[in-house]
Length: 533
Image (cartoon, rainbow, N blue to C red; front, top):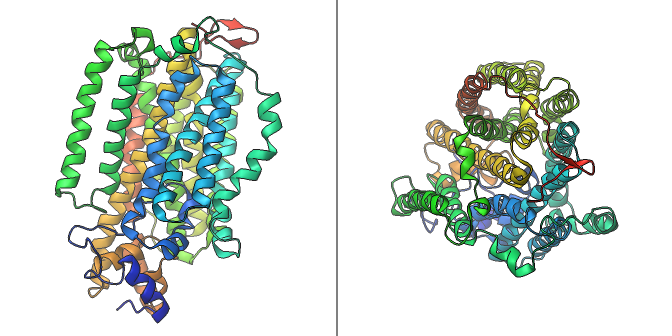
């Protein structure tokens, strides 16, 4: 079986370095190989082929996803900023930042500018998310908070379903992929009156001047944290894809991650430039095992939830040749069950405030669901797969956002911004790490299997092929070859579900240690919990 490209496609492949290993400028260590873990977000994943066709430079393509992920690491610093500066104006600033990033992406004349836009959008998006969590903490009581936190899963669910539809529709229309980014601008403009007139102005430090507030930010730790996060994200995303695992670049990235981790621990301990209360990460949280447990749980359940939204559609892509619309439909059982159960958790947690039942039942359902997904093969009916994903969705829904409200109820009012930031960064790291590790498992195993079926194909062609049915390499196969190679692609996905299963088992074991942890009461000022120091 050989991959035969039409003449027009061979031109694009040659420009992008995908036609053969000799044309790849970095074929010696895997540079430029498209990867199923390159793009973070289904809307952008669906426009990847169109971006590659226009700009080429496949060696820079992974940075489109990594750039956004790097920006989202600002969610922890933003959490501190919301506890110091006027929350309304910080939130509006982040909206502008996100819209600016979207505009830069949409108008990008080359891939470098597109990457810059993704970083800007990631920073702004992280600030908007942190702001949403902060406003929920400011404007609600502890009893109200779970249902409002659960409401965020509705928006996330809509995005997960509509993302591939919107991105794919723009990429295939005369509007072009650029409108997948431009669409954020009119949406932002439509909600501008609400931002200006409905969002309350809340200043947590009204007696401080702007200069005094700036001195309350842990700039040293922020710089070290963002640098270490950048090295870690690049190491787990590029390792084995852009750079081989034993290459100097990969080793340097891992080494820098370790060094900056050690430095960050020392800086957090001695906190130069700020007092203990204003450290970027609340180190005193580490003295409370319950808070550590809840952060680890957030890391695990968020990682499983996001990665699941990638591998369910990817499996059906190869099984049924699904496009963007069908991909969104295949996600519905998982998304609906997650959203519904999350809302149930938010509604009933004030009356059933103990954490352990929610976490134990939820993680148990995820264990069962992922274990059943591990058994899936080409003969498994769609109905069974939908049933298995419903179990995973219902399980994650039991506690995917519950931790935000619980942690805030366990700390003092002045520590609520710290609690929001700590949980948000645990959530974000879980999403980034799980998607990258799952991609590494899937790619390494499927490449090995597909290479047996297509011995004459180059590594770059094989990597492009397993990225999805919209890839040029997969489209170039004859129908007979597609039928023959699909089992070699979908089979290794079982190991991704095994990875999720192990994570779910760990979550289940940790849930037993929650004991009598419950949603506690807190100081209430004007209908909400005060975050003013």
